[in-house]
Length: 337
Image 1 (tube, helix red, strand yellow):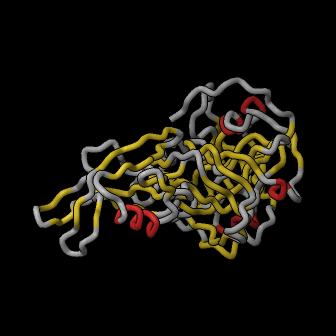
Image 2: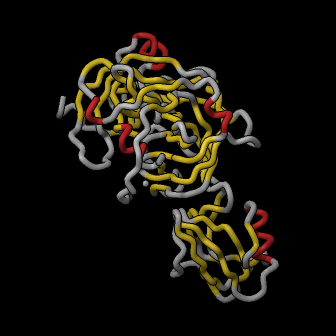
Image 3: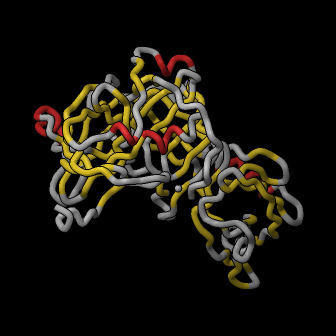
């Protein structure tokens, strides 16, 4: 098994359009949480524009990229131009064209905020001012809610998000989660993991706000409506996890979670937060028949053993959709105090 599991894996977030660990402050661990398993629409960096790259601008004096050599990097989020809030690509372009002289950009990188001063150049073809930056609006995708604490903090996904345009882990302290409905899925096949297909139910009405997006998932403050119909469950920890039968709660149709049987095949001895805490195998006949195993979009699905929440599904093996990884719930709860 060790050699077979060469562990070519894929993160379980549905291809997002378009995480460094710091020791956490000690917190009082809750005795119970609300069990997730329902799908969530996830929107990151919705206020501002994400930098995806840098390009030369063809001017009458030659090709230049004003942004090259500055502190700005891919996956930074531009939130202001000369102190004015950026509300999309058109807003960014309008503020840039109206500027006089150098332009001051207010930029966010994770939790850090800084400013950068750039001198625009004029594109000889369009006559427009440009900074040599390629940008896009926020990152959007679908994942699964893992838990909601009694104090209203939620955790989802269980792994970091990689920006599809830059190939880099994406960190941010801003975003929203939305109600989501699963409309269908593509089955897992050997060499190609399947994926859930869903839609945001109401993009104008988020059910929670994201304030942490790191290598262990997305975390934030839930609105009261998110916990409707969620049931309380005792909270376990890594010391409770044993090899053998367990269950995952996930949604492959609509918006209601179902319980599916799995087997915890192997457990890692982790004393500090780390990915791939346990190797799991889907054994539930219904889930195997329907999906062929674990699908992209099921990341965050709670893992329950002996009546306690002990972890979350995070990865699927590309070579075998019935096999995947889970994360100890301990590592997610550190961001929900």
